Length: 492
Ligand SMILES: [Zn+2]
Image 1 (cartoon, protein in one colour):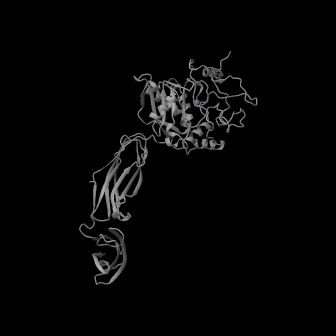
Image 2 (tube, protein in one colour):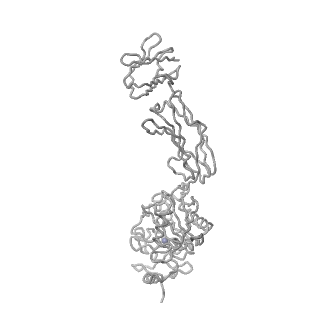
């Protein structure tokens, strides 16, 4: 009797736990439904991928977890992991996707996980998954719920991103195809023999809605060692309308022997690329390692004598930068007593690989900032959205306290003085009221008049005096016809 894998599987399930089984290719199961793109979308994506406008590869961040025994044995070597990633990166080039390890390799020395089933797998994920990484676990033995050894399995795209992971059995990690196969599941690809949506026929009539959803992968009755010889299909299976299957054992998403699986099709590549920009885009470019810091030679108290421009010199240092990247940069002021924050400067820095320093003097024009008179702090921040993976994120901000000393012991001030076009009038006292402000010339003639609505302890206003003739003037502030302040200024 010919033992097919399916028959054997049935027998193994019914007689567990006494049977141990030869390794199955993959434990990633068909979903009830899967995301599909139309043939037109897939074809256009492939054209884009191969056009001159092709962009830089999308780099995805990998976290590698290596399971070992409690005494540190039985783990896959770091070199084998790196080799597997290199092979995978070559295969993924046409999809414009690349992978990088961006955290130290995490060794989990615990006998509990040497044979990882569903339950241990869930514990691994909840204990060790790093957010925003593609978490890959290299495990001595990966078992399905029936106790059968698998080469690996992977989470398809879903909403529970923190729980997604790839399990790879050490013995299959080096075969050149399992790792890439599992990563494909992570990017939404199904097996070529998938029956999601129904059985796919050999004739290309339902290839988009049934099976793996691709019309450039032939219908596949499920390959196995018994129906593939020398990487050729030798089976004798027919689809429901009587057409003989002509599957492709070279496709990486088939169950053909690992050594036969060497390629993806254009539609498979297009699908991965589309998912990389969609469901999986939160892993994209997270692979940014750098140590950033801010430093300044300024004391942390800024004594302001007037409302003109002041400058804060400081230096951004970037060390151990793995990839050229864009870093967000922000300067904000904090108001007192409300503690409201107002971002006054916002820009991005390009930081190159390696180490670099950027001396950046920040010029702040107080007169252009609304309500600056109530500003109590200036805060300079880099990487405000925590997009960079850093060893120390506590040195990415500088804080300066602002001391407003405009009038010193006076209650009002005019500056600049002399002036050509504008004066700024500053008034500080406890009175909250409407004041009358008048500008008179040296002869006492009224030339300008306005009502000041002072709603706060501090009042500041910029006044256009460009129309006034050259000469000396007085600004007189009155409350209930009583003079409160007199300030002299010269118009040039
Ligand atoms: Zn699979």
